[in-house]
Length: 401
Image (cartoon, rainbow, N blue to C red; front, side, top):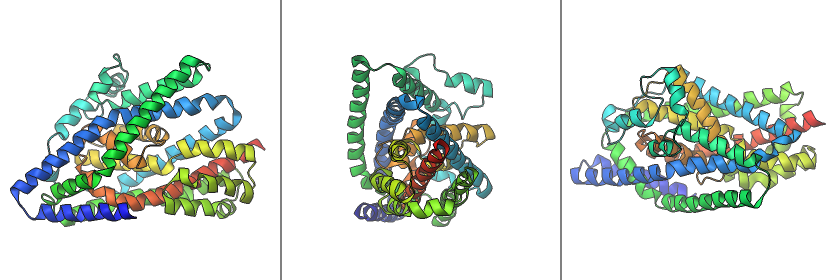
């Protein structure tokens, strides 16, 4: 709560500073915002790559079991559906662009065409070729998101399939150690983030009229929350009904976990309550609940996938990227893989989205004004994630009885 109030206060202070119209102050805020953008870009590539590699290396080896197979299938189905609903709502509601002058900061549209294979005027054949790396260093230097995800996925699955040995343990422990170090740096950056929020907010308010921002951001929030509501009350119950389960009964039994997730905003912190509710209230077999739920807490991120997709489309659209059908479909794939690999990242999918956008040079200044709103979005997303975990567990238990 204190952190939320601090962020909101920083947003207000920044908006006031931007409205003062002092050129030297605007220059200072632009400098601070640029520093934070560069720091986010610095952490973007290792955040994405290490998160995906360690997630698949840790859990991919369990793919031989029937329980994990059912868990993975339901996770992918529900996560893809959540992202697809977000994309559909985005097209229907169509949030508007912020004024062009608000996005004229250094390193926006020109950088995108060089960093992202999705924004240049190439054929789909060329797009596919640009994803296949022919040099292991080049994707890191260019921030090619699709190539990096492909490499991370391949390395993670490859590690999971290696036979247990001292060499494998050393590699996995080394990667986990690097991830711990990265998270320490991320926590330090987040600790200073109110200063960045002040700068982003001042930069934005100095150039954008409040009415346009409210209309554009309002529609964006409507898309994000609308997708979460549809996934929670329509899509997941339909999955349960398709497997012969009563969604009202399942939700009623799992309500303590869902409510705790809403208020704690942490699937991991809610996990003990989720397992207790599944075993004692819903009657899930202990071996299934204790296997499925920890995995789902790590990889089953319905709300996160939708947030990554919608926010990425919104930021890229404001950066001048044409949102063609091919672009949207490719970013659905990116959002799903990123959400699955989002385990353990502080601030969850917000920071991962910011990393993705920084990695392709998109105008991340927009995320400065989204950050305080994300507190509410995060509550709803976490509740949806735990509800989805519960549904996947219930369906897996039903299938294996």
